[in-house]
Image (cartoon, rainbow over the protein chains, first blue to last red):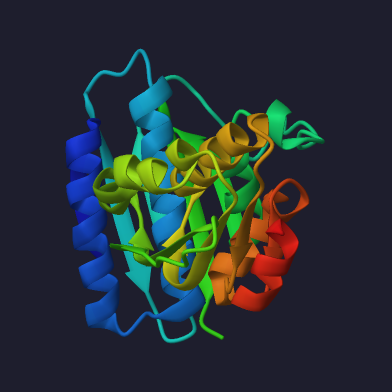
Amino acid sequence: MRRWTVDVTLHAVSAAQQELCAHLDSLGVQGRASFVINMVYEEAALNLVDHAVHGRTSTFDLHLVHVVYATTITIEDDFAPFDPIRAPIGAPPATLLEHDGRGLGIKLMTDMADELRYERVCERNRLSATVLHR
Amino acid sequence: MELTNLERGDGISHVALAGKLDIAGLHEVDVPFHGLTAAQQRPAIIDLSGLDYIASLGMGMLISCARSLERRGAPMVLYGARGPVDEALRATAIDQIITMVDSEAAAVQAVS
């Protein structure tokens, strides 16, 4: 297992994304699996940068567990409760001119992760996504 | 992240995106991509065959440029997306609002 603690700033989130990608490469996680782990990290972390409030700290924890058949990423924070799995996703705008680019991240996570779980544990948000190695 | 201006000389902007359009990648290409597409105010075709990664932040860049062009009556077409990039664009229904095709020839035909 590999663990990072990341400041909730765009600069720190971006730097950690590069470390995460390098670590996935070193583990031999490639293709769709690498894409999905990276995407879940980016979406969850940017959501914290944009919306996180009422935290005791200004950081979040990132865990990566890699086994033969799957990789799981977990993002934990102590900000206000937010369950992306239950967040309402409206129908996509019918036309390009109506599209404001919002709501894509949750759709990406729920559609592309093989398993997406949310728990509220000890006043912390815990979001985990698993992708199978195909 | 690589952004390449592929000159065509026929009034169509032709741009290729390659690598990872992650947070750092977007920071590198966002402004020049707008300059090569939306700012030109003419039809644009975008080669995604070398793109390995995109999430909602990168999709927002594509939507913003395509929307800007659409307001001026100029279409933007994506072509060559593959693997999880293609899967992600279709999962978010981007293909319903921005035309996606397989090849450069089909992209040129779609904007002509």
